Length: 135
Image 1 (tube, rainbow, N blue to C red):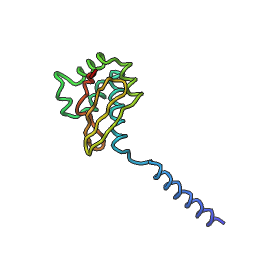
Image 2: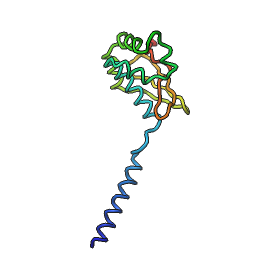
Image 3: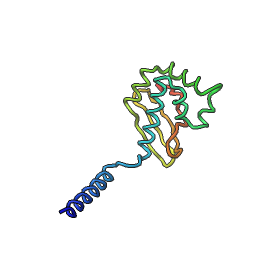
Image 4: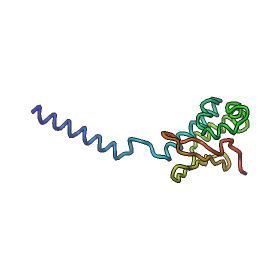
């Protein structure tokens, strides 16, 4: 009896692992990672966490700001508006991936397009970070 109970428990555990593997539990794909990066960026800007916002940018993108990335992030948050940034995070983005580069077009920000690059284990924003409206 104990042997059959142990066998049934082992079989159930194996089945659970197979089901979870089939449901996408595991490593996130590039689209999910791009979405996570853009979400962090918008939420950081909307809460004025300029250090966290800067951390979502590539080193090249951070060097584009003079004198500091944090000061530039504060200006972007003020210009775009924290409510609008939070709304963009809530609404999500249309995402496309081409190898190690990708883009995110956030809903509600008038054609803003973020360019991202793979930077294992994450993706980082390399262009479009100033969130200039294209009307």
